[in-house]
Length: 294
Image (cartoon, rainbow, N blue to C red; front, side, top):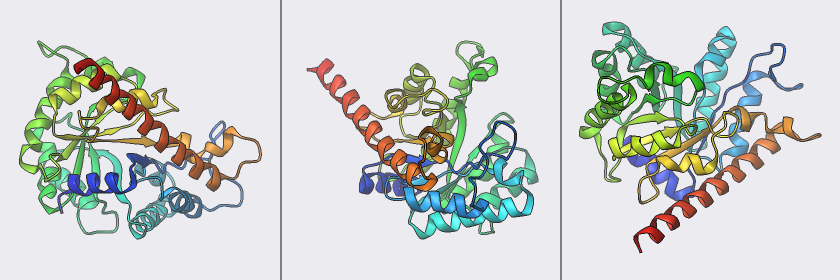
């Protein structure tokens, strides 16, 4: 089944666009790490299980698993298996991108049939079309790709906002994403070649939607990085579809914000509150648009 259609169907069924970023922070000074009494795999998988009623997908960030070696990658596999068992869509946040056979190997690793395979993967377009073609070739098999377009980090504009020559570089990337995705639009009207556009730049997000009308947009930057629910819905299409919103640290470590809170219960409460907040923001945005056209 077309990946974008699967995502749209899951969103309708749960009335949700919430994505769980399963990013277990490292055990380092000032970092939260793994709560006492938990193993890495248990902590991650119990968060997934607790939040499954509110979320439609999980997005584990590979760096936090790779940094822990073999145990970390085993935990990554357990997270993916748990998510699949619960009917959640899996997105490998790998941000891969290379050329030739190397890119093909990355595509096979995360979108093939091996131990690390997921439903979709994030990719870096910096090296151009030939770096992304092996990933996009997997889309015909029901996989999805999210291309970094306008990222949520504060310094993203150092390169992404530079003129090239008549508009910012990120807009050129968005135009290419729109072109690459044209052959993979499903019954939902959405393409399985999507984009990453941060909630921290809502003005650019609205422009991104204009440039990529059919793209499924993955929105990071919610809460911890400063993006609000109102910012996140800037990536939505006019009918309120076509976007999903990720929360990572703010969700996994929600228990840190309240004395005596339990990690799993706090995460579940946060995920449901996030779902309701985004739905309310989306309803408000659509109401404002209707008022302007009345």
